[in-house]
Image (cartoon, rainbow, N blue to C red; front, top):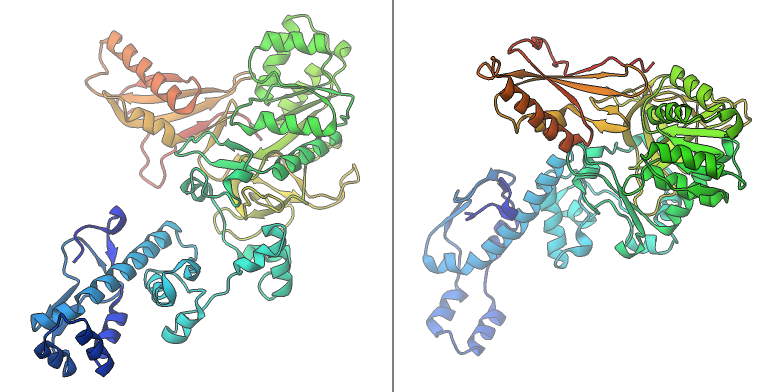
Length: 573
């Protein structure tokens, strides 16, 4: 039996009986064995004579291989002469321990993969050839679909699956080049980029599970910069960049800036945040690559932003749509005449927007406003940027491969059909990402643009396929709100999130049911609970919210399906 679960897990998977049975069937001591034992001068002749005639006569009861078991639960019971049990004890224990450990680990990995196929290819690091063979068998029993160890297939009829030899990869300058050449040599599996749909999707949960550096594809010393998502629903996604990745990022954004009509003579005022957020850095690197002047003022300090814009002669502003409108209002209060400022372009992104918002921005700043799209998981801003035609974002297809899928079935949709955007990066060294489900809803077009470019064009994002909402450029999930509310007593577990945009800035209100005991005339106590809820939520999501305590049972319940937690009253379409 196991005294405790392997690796402190919740269960163990029994494995190793095949090898034990084979060992016992063939257990005997020939003349050479006896002579060796005699030479040790520690065994008497009576014992050696016993070994000469040895025949295993014990009865063995065992749990079937692949069965989940728990601590102190019998796995194998040996009944017979003590001397015979002692002769097989060490072999029995090491075999069951080794193979059960692998089977258990494989089972946990398969469960964590949530339906995606898992194969075994650990022979290179196994402890000897027998360790490789039986380790592969144990992994198959644990749930893997096959193994790269072909002799295991020959011996046990376990499906052999091909992998790329490490020596093959070492022949090339990059893993991408190795994979590309491999695909060309063995075209029956992946012939073109269209065949990428044969590969499984990657999700944000997959990336979080590898926190912090588990997705890095190069040695740590080659990573020169890291960024991360906000970690709004758990551990953040950490994105690693090599020098080549940073250079490519700058190249991609620089192209987009030229599509906006900018060049090396321009002065770009970047109000996006710096730090772990990718927004500020992507524009920064793009401006450097373009040869333009960058003003890294970052977020906030709105009156200072206006002053610098006027004094420094900024020709381009980068901001979120809602902040841009606010910046324009402050500039108007300061007496700024944008007809005289001479802005050439606006770049905006990081939150959803409407055509009316773009019109308002362009009317305020007296120049065109161009949409910018990016994701920390893939690179950052620059994946898609608008040209002068303002008819969709051109995707840098030499760096990213886009697909649109049905968010429910995962099937690829045709050009022009609306669905979920899936992205693969083609040149990333530090953290290659294949078929990442962005959850962003859009459509793709491949006809030639008015500007003459033939790159795929992506429509602006109009929503999400999950329950995430973006408020003031911040990703907010109902689960975050719920986590904060669970810390507060005197309230019921019923709430609603109401998002509005009464003018230019998003506002978020959280309606929470008070408990029967709290919902009374004790106004002072209710104010204290409201304040506490507001503080907990702000600590969780990073932005302030309005909190309303409402009467018990006043928030609608759902008797069919999913409760509507979020009511988004913004006109985003």
